[in-house]
Length: 206
Image (cartoon, rainbow, N blue to C red; front, side, top):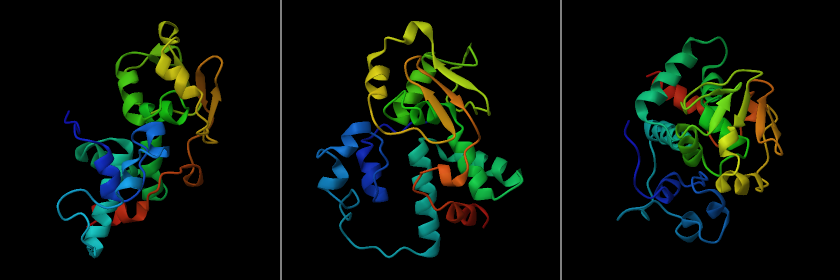
């Protein structure tokens, strides 16, 4: 699978908002967006008026970059969401939020989604007491996500748990035992991703 290997701070500058791709650094005075609040590249400081298509495309790119997935996978999530009952945009966000790497990040067990994905791939997590190393695994209501016994001393996890980022209402964290429970599937008001999902739906519906 293709991966983005350049500076992730460029992605925040391109989108014009903090995507929190580098954890606590994004809240410090070292944040690239705070220091250079314009798009990267030679023409980054030029003002560009986006067309309707450009606005929709920018929103889709923002969604991909927030959750750290590539175009084909993002489009597949849209197709699944489009077949579900309910509002397509909300179903799309719910699918993205249910990814195991995102749940690990939301629980505060990793400082960024990128690191959460790496920890999952390296067999550090279990779902319902069974090892799961697939970042795109979709959790369900009642699932228990926990650090495996041999990984409980990981410094990155312990440091992340000290963060006061907060856990969304649809999840419950038991910090001492390093485990979380999916209490419900996320509702739109419980998803704080800075996205206008209707623009993504309009783009893919053309």
